[in-house]
Image (cartoon, rainbow, N blue to C red; front, side, top):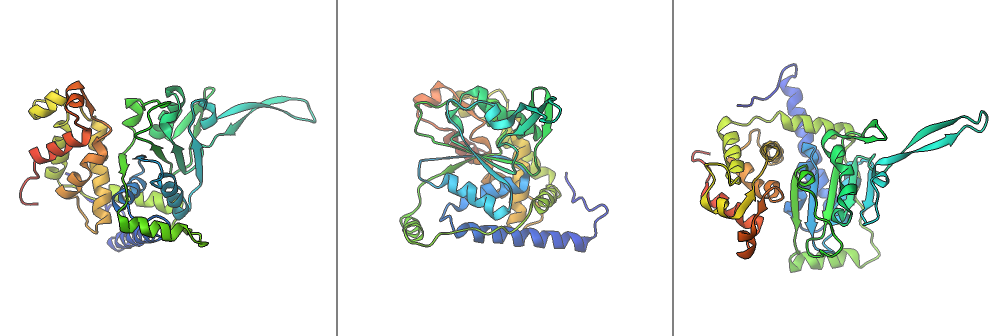
Length: 342
C-alpha cells in the first residue's frame, strides 16, 4: 500500500537519518529518566506524539508527575515551552493573545499591535484543561488542527513544531467542564498515568528528598524534530496491516455492519476517520522506535486503546454495567485477532 519515499534521497543518507533518530530517541529517554521514574508506556506515547506531530491528553491522579513529565520533555527537546493553568475565569484572549492600542509618542498616531499569548510556543502545557469553560477550551481548536490562530479577523501562524500536551484529573469532577468531542478528537492519544510500583516510589523519594536537583539537558532542536516527523511518514505499511487498522476502527462504530454485538449494545458513537489516520501514523513512529522499517500488526494493536479511548462514547447500558471505554476496546481486541503470518 505504502512505499518508502526515497525519491531524490540516497540510501546512505536515509540510513544516517534513521541512525540519528534512534540516537536522539535513546538520549531523550536517558535525560527524562534523570527526572521521571517509571511510566514507560506513558513516556513512549508522549514520544510518539512528538515524532508524529500530534497532541497528547494526559489523564492522571494528582501527584503522578503529569506536569513534571511535560516540562522535562520540553527541556530535553530544547523547545520553547509555555504553560497555561486553566481556570474557570480564563478567557480565550488569555491563550491566543490580543490586540492593544499603542500610541507613537512623537506623532501621537495610534495603531493596533498584536501581543502574543502563551499559545505561541513549541510545547504548550494546558494544565487541568477541563477546568475552563468550553468557550475558552475552543481557543485551542484551530491551533491544534491548523497550527494557526485567528484574533480579531487576523490569522497568525504558530511556531513549528507545535505540541499541545494537556493534563486533566479524572476524579475531581466538581468545577470541571468535560472537553467537547470535537476537541477530544484532535488529541492523538489519551494517555493514562497510574500509580508507580513500590520500588519506583522508593526511587522517587530518594530522588526528590535530598539537596540534589534533577535536571534534563536538551538533546535535539526544532529543525531536527521536523525532520524526524517527515522520516516517520516515510515508513512503509503493508495494505493488509493498514486494512487491519481500518477494520479495528470500524469495529468501534455501532452503525457499522461489521461491528460485534457488544459494540452495538454499549456504544453510542464510535471512532472517526481521524482515528484511523492517527492509528497508522503513530504505528509508523512506534515501528521506527522499535528498530523496524515497517509497521506490524503488533504496532496497531499496542496503540489501539490510547488512540481510541477518548473517541468512543458509551451509552447508559455500559454505564449501568460499569463498563469503561477500555473494557470495550479490549473486548474488540479479543474479538478480532491479528491475521496470521505476521
